[in-house]
Length: 295
Image (tube, rainbow, N blue to C red; front, side):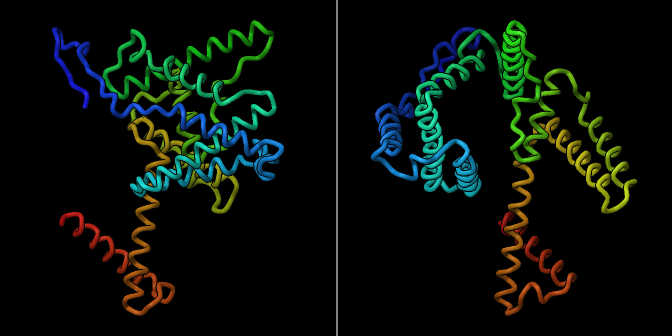
């Protein structure tokens, strides 16, 4: 483990870093790159040869979600496998690009390494950041500086600068996308002064929602505005809205599965129970959770 040596003024200059977890993946990574390259050769795999960025785009999403499932289930054994599947997607996309003369896996690695160093000036530069919140603020400021430089190059070339929100993928899950665009706007100064002010916005949006006709397109739009305001409550309080909803959904699924198990043991089916009986069963499962947590 790393050892800390307190020097004058609390300096961390005497830190001895732990290198036992510093993996040397050069040979293994090159082996993977060569395997994917071989699969794409004329005498390789017909399936791999015919793939394009577009044809396997959904695979990237599926593999990422499977890895997330392992993380949420604390399944370290299968997480290793799923992260490998995610990495395979990255290398395959890189090889498709290399075959088209666009970029290579080396370019990808160099680019992300340079970006990480550039966006961590508190580690690799002279900036200070003593907390996670300060790191996020610093990260946002560096990204804004990068965008300003990119915009300047675009103007010099006679092109329109990229919009602030254009870097947020529209394909992201809705809650995640809402939080990202809100955070970008807030970093530019478009922000509420406090969480209480956002709650006032939530109340305003709820009132507008309730004024619209049930089942109308306007009511649906107002519900979206209400959700957007709630996402900003989460953002102001340091909560990831997407993760919070995933956790709540997982909790609901777990309780529902417990209800099904109890109903099965009693020889009944859930679809044969009344609403009142379902609610009673839900309350019992919830109470059992509480007792298990206390025990």
